[in-house]
Image (tube, rainbow, N blue to C red; front, side, top):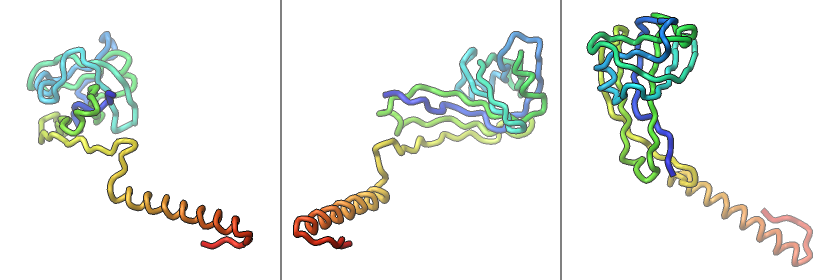
Length: 165
């Protein structure tokens, strides 16, 4: 099975321009795109920290080293120049490879200059896989319920009407 996992993130970017008359997309500094492992025309999600708007578009290259983060087209009605945004990209990763997958997080300052780059670990807590600490509690609870049920059945078969707990 494949899972949609965050592949890369530009965190804390500041929108440098909003161009409503452009045909659409998000223009990004080419250097930031390379650092975040983004390709031209790759789908990205843009989240506006200031107003909560979320949108899906694709990115195109702007001048390298310029710090450009330009919202184009109709999206410029949702996100304004000066807004702080998070730009995310996702990948379809086979479940068996998740433990080795490491998303890239590029932290930016208010001028879209790189503060640090990290590779996060993909911490697994998949459905059906109970962490050991919880597994012990849940297993114990199931045993207790089963024991109570057996006690009730045993009491019922002996003709007694009281319930032993």
